[in-house]
Amino acid sequence: MNARRHSIAVRIGTVTVGGDAPISVQSMTKTDTRDVAATTAQVQALARAGSDIVRLAVPDMEAAAALPEIRAGSPVPLVADIHFDHRLALAAIDAGIDALRLNPGNMRRREHLEKVVARAKEREIPIRIGVNAGSLPASYRPDEPLPVRMVALAEEQVRVLESMDFGLIKISLKASDVTTTIEAYSQMAHRVAYPLHLGVTEAGPPSTGLVRNAIGIGVLLHLGIGDTIRVSLSGDPLLEVD
Image 1 (cartoon, helix red, strand yellow):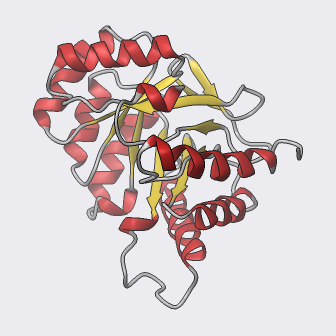
Image 2 (image 1 turned 60 degrees about the vertical axis):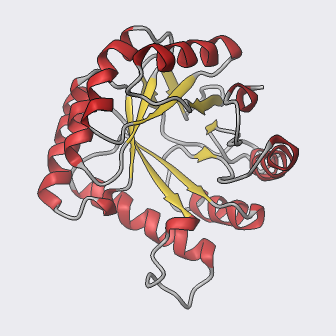
Image 3 (image 1 turned 90 degrees about the horizontal axis):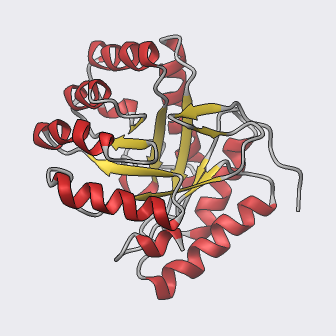
């Protein structure tokens, strides 16, 4: 096994990601976040199973309004998954969320992103830039290989956050194809020092998803790449932790 890549340490609540910290395990709730009781119960079950960090979808203001109570009942740090709407990100921060997962490019007005970044910086809340091969714009560098396109987009979004004097950054570059995933992370590992969150997206049910994740994540860890992982599977999220 290769020596582990050196990365900047970033704190997500009580958990340190990167640096010399152990590689952390993440999962994601599959409940409706607006259902406080069900979501809190699933977060607690994931924590008992060994998940160090749990991510939740925040699709609307009703879900954001549920976050304070869910956060109060969580024994582990929580990450809010935000798409497009900067108001949801601001509400999640105010609710006490420990980190955000978003794509800066999805917030088309810079002043909206600046508000989110300023609030995250004030509260020392990291932002994970998530690049997904399946949602890459078809018009973005169409003549280049997919891993190159993924890395280029991630770098662009990193520079946007850096231009706002923000450095509490994590990065993920997920694809359903294992080879693409390995190549994208391998390229990114040599370009930035931020911690990398590993995973193979849309890996499918356990019968196939476990194999894809074992190969993709396993190869990258063998190369010394990766600071936190999620084994993404359809079905019960407790299987991801196992």
